[in-house]
Amino acid sequence: MRQHTVIGAKIIGNHPSGLLHTAQIVALNHHEKRNGSGYSNGLAGEDIPHVARVVAIADVFDALTSGRPHKRAWSVEGAVGLIRQQCNQHFTPELVGIFLDCLPEILKTRKRWADAKS
Image 1 (cartoon, rainbow, N blue to C red):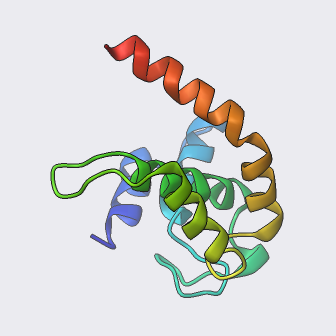
Image 2 (cartoon, one colour):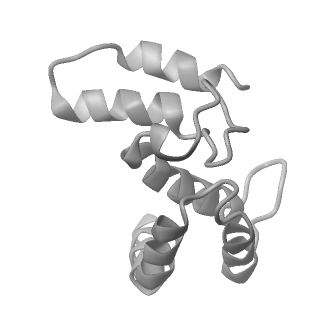
């Protein structure tokens, strides 16, 4: 499981496209943690690329609040509680604050796309 970051980055590869370059950075680094306990490279703090720190919050929120065959979806409140708890351990505090400020819009967008699937 921990190799999915490296495998994903290899699949994307090195491209001159700014979008694909960013995707490769995200794929490789979105499971790094602010305190250095993440993977693939054990990066910490500001050494984690900014875009990967942003996506890490979104990824955890989505993973927790989405149902999967092996688990029920968490409530938004429960997911937000965990993100707050992990602020400064896993996540960059300033980015958590921005996420929380944007949460109403995030939830509106999520509902719009969920409704579009139905």
